[in-house]
Image 1 (tube, one colour):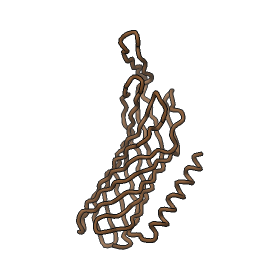
Image 2 (cartoon, rainbow, N blue to C red; image 1 turned 90 degrees about the vertical axis):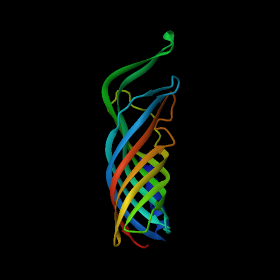
Image 3 (tube, one colour; image 1 turned 45 degrees about the vertical axis):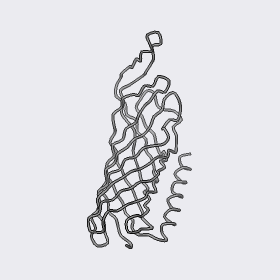
Image 4 (cartoon, rainbow, N blue to C red; image 1 turned 120 degrees about the vertical axis):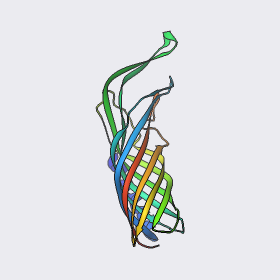
Length: 218
């Protein structure tokens, strides 16, 4: 199943590259770190479990096309590590005592989810000089590559494909046909990781990357 999803993702990426290849304006790569966390919410008792973030790599290839004075389209193909840390072993409800929530703590466990992500985004640039701030906004699809946990209660039946939204901002310095930039992104998901009641787990991630852009045409 995962091989099929990976094949589909690569075909999608190749298709987008073929479309963009007709009017390329730039392409490049970026790398950095990510800070990912998750919300664990128990629906029947309306309880949100406290978690701690995990730090991972953020690696992307991108291509830009249909470039105007300020707007263009950009698509990112990324490798992302998401997940969280938690010391909560179980959550129960004492119905005989006014539905009191009982949280049992244990040793801290870490869960990581590795994704291949495809994100076509609108890119808006401010100014035309050598120093250009910009913004990114667009949909995203995360395809699960691997799930690992040292918890005694691993999640079952994770969603292998999760759509989401990406918002980013950055600052780029132009040097002839090269662009050097720093970028900050926030990623939120439309679907939960589990997709099953009573426990819903949602990913959230912030990434900071440094990148290099090669300008094909203005």
